Structures are given as structure tokens and as C-alpha cells.
Length: 240
Ligand code: ADP
Ligand code: MG
Image 1 (cartoon, protein in one colour):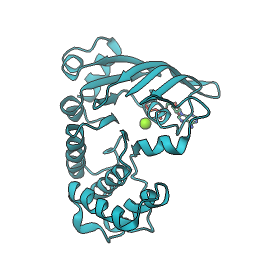
Image 2: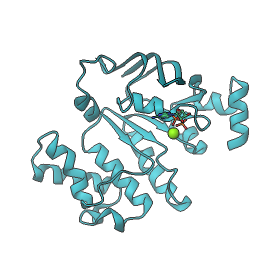
Image 3: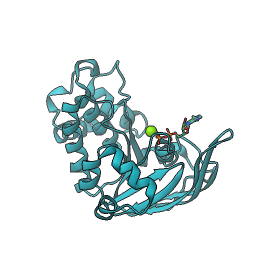
């Protein structure tokens, strides 16, 4: 599904990604962990061209993202992103948040988009919130709306950047439950997270990033039982 080859990214003189190579299979769930500033967000953002890599190639489902001729808008429809701070439109109701992109970008009829929106709101447990404004929702509810909104576009891949980091502890569970449900549904997902228990249970593969290098790529069982590098071992000691 995704092939990343020797991707680098620099901001001026700062080298943030230093040659990342990996492949992600269709339906694979990847948890990306690592210290703050290690390049996790930048890597994720490169995968839907919110950042343009300085070097290397990224191919998603046969389309080369790093080819300047690639249509970014089309790519973004296929690769959804969920952010730490939700990014809902505050002036639109939950339902209008959901149908905004499908009706404007994809040209889907409003009634059809609403039907789909209701199904997705049911799926994330918020069917009763369709006509509410985001300001009336808890953080956990906002994030579940953001996830539903992302799914409205039928993405092939969903990228999550610390989806629970801005939430009060009691709301983390409800959001992780929704993400776990998606993981079981066969969606290809990459999730930057600090929730080690979740990473261990929900991911097929763990990526450990440090200093812009993909230092480890292994199964959760192997990684959490015995990381291969001193850096990862020290990181785990600090967070577990
Ligand atoms: P992480 O998500 O692992 O915490 P980031 O990918 O956000 O790490 O950031 C990696 C490094 O790149 C940090 O040193 C950060 O300050 C820097 N960085 C990220 N985005 C930019 C940017 N737009 N301009 C300059 N530096 C940036
Ligand atoms: Mg980050």
C-alpha cells in the first residue's frame, strides 16, 4: 500500500528526517513511537504532503506522491489525517462538518452525504449529536467527530497524529475504542501515539523513531519484550 524510500526532510539546516525507508501493507496498523522532536509528525505529514520531502520517494497505492505532477487534492482525499487538536470547523454543526468536504470536493449530493454521515456518527457513538456545534462537545466527542469526518471521504489510509494527547484522561478510552474498531475493519493506519498499552494491543507493527531515523521496526511482541537498541530500551524505561 505504501512504499517509502530514503525519505529526507530538512527545515533550513535542521535535518528532521534522515533517510526513512519502509513499506506498509494494505490493512496494516502501524504505531509510531519515539521521543518528542524525533520527527514523528513530520514523517506522518510527508505521507499526505502536508510537508514535501526534501529527498526520497513515497508511493501510495501505485501513485508517487513525490512526483511534482501528482494531484495533491486527490491524494488528500485518499489519505485522511486526524490531528491532536481535532481541527473541526467551529461555525458548522457536527453534520455540516461531516458533509463539507464530500459535497464540496467530491460533489456528492447533500442527502446522500447526510445518510453516510449518520451511519458514521452511529459508528462512533454520536448519532444524537448531528445538529450540535463543536463547542458543545467534550474533547473525546470532538475527536470522534473528527474521525467520522475523515472517514466520510472513504480514505485508503488514515494517519493519526497523537489523537488522544489533548484529551482529559477519562476521554482517552472512548477515542482509542473507536480507533481500535477501525483497526479491526481492515483500514490501513499509521498512528503516532504515547499510549504504549494501546500500541501494543492494536498495532501490527511498531516503528521507533529517534533523531529522524527509523531505528526499529518490529512486532509489538518483540519490541516490548526486548527492543533491539539501547535508545529504544531507554525510551521504554521512561514511558512504561
Ligand atoms: P515529533 O512529532 O516527533 O515530536 P516533529 O516532526 O514535530 O517531531 O519535529 C521534529 C523536528 O523538526 C523538531 O526539532 C521540530 O522543531 C522541527 N520542525 C517541525 N516542523 C517544523 C517546521 N515547519 N519548521 C521548522 N522546524 C520544524
Ligand atoms: Mg509530533
